[in-house]
Structure formats: C-alpha cells, structure tokens
Length: 209
Image 1 (cartoon, rainbow, N blue to C red):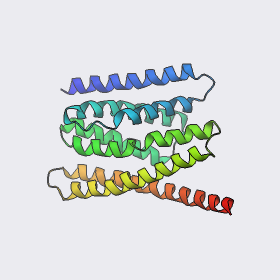
Image 2: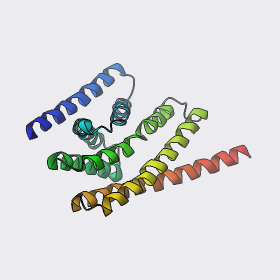
Image 3: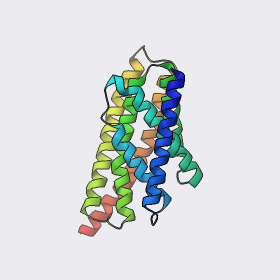
C-alpha cells in the first residue's frame, strides 16, 4: 500500500514537472513564473469537483505531487514569503498524514477544495496584470469573484468545517491542530486581501468622483 502511494506521488510530481517543462518550452518569451502559474492554474482546475470517496486517495496523491513541485519552485526562485511557504508546508504535511493514517481524507480534501477553488481566479488576475489587461472591467470582475469566493468559502464555509471537526470525537488531536493552523493561515491571507480590496475600492471611488 505504502509503495503504491509513493509511486502515485512520484508519478504526480513527474507529471507536474513535465507539464512545467512543456510550458517553459512553449512560452520561451515568458518568464519562469508564467509557466509555473500555468501549472498552478491547471492544478486548481483539476483538483476541485472530485468529492467521490473512491477518488480521494488519487486526488491527494495528485495534489501532494503538485505541492512538492510548487514548494520546490518557490524556494528555488525565492518568489514567495513565509506565509505562502507555511501554507504549502502545512498542506504537504496534512496530505502525507491522511495518506499514512488511511483516514481524515474527507477533511483534507475539503481543505484542498476550499484552497484551490479560488486559485484559478488568482492566476487569472496575475496573467491579466502581466499582459496589461488588469485595469479593465474583466480585472474588476476577477477581483470581485476572488474576494467573494475567498471570503465565502475559505473563511465562511471553512469556519463551519473547522467547527464540525473540532466537536467531532473521530479525528485525532493533531488533525484538529492542523485544521486550526490552516484556518489561521487563511485568515492571514484574508486580512491582506481585504486591505487590498479596500484600497482598490477607495481608488475606484475617487476616480468615479
């Protein structure tokens, strides 16, 4: 069982590395971050919408390979701060824990769903900015949807899921600690997002006046 899981994770990691290499070759005029964000966007689209229990292990292995790839990329290019690195590290540890224990896959997949449902919008925002189309109606719509989804899913629905996990006697104590840590990270992101949304709203208001 353990060997099979390791093979799946290694295949996933190899697949993401191959996809990243392909994007780099196809987008030679773009930066490495462009290709990495295309990989991130692809993972965000693939990892959501798979609630079926028989698929949980496969989704976890797929996502674990991705997070190992992205964490390595972020460290190598030093592109992210401590908060994002903490998010990736907690995600990796949580997935490994669920695979090793053979349980808590529901909670971990729920956290992954909440994390990745906003990811495509985040990447679209970055691509719009890179191509000079961010300051447009499309950019405003993407920002609004991102803030609304992040607030509603990762903070709102996340609070409900965390409460259910904390009151349930089934999950182990370190699973609950991991859930609290991930929710705390989401709140740190949320504070930064709300600050950005407030500043942008004020600028839009002054421009309108």
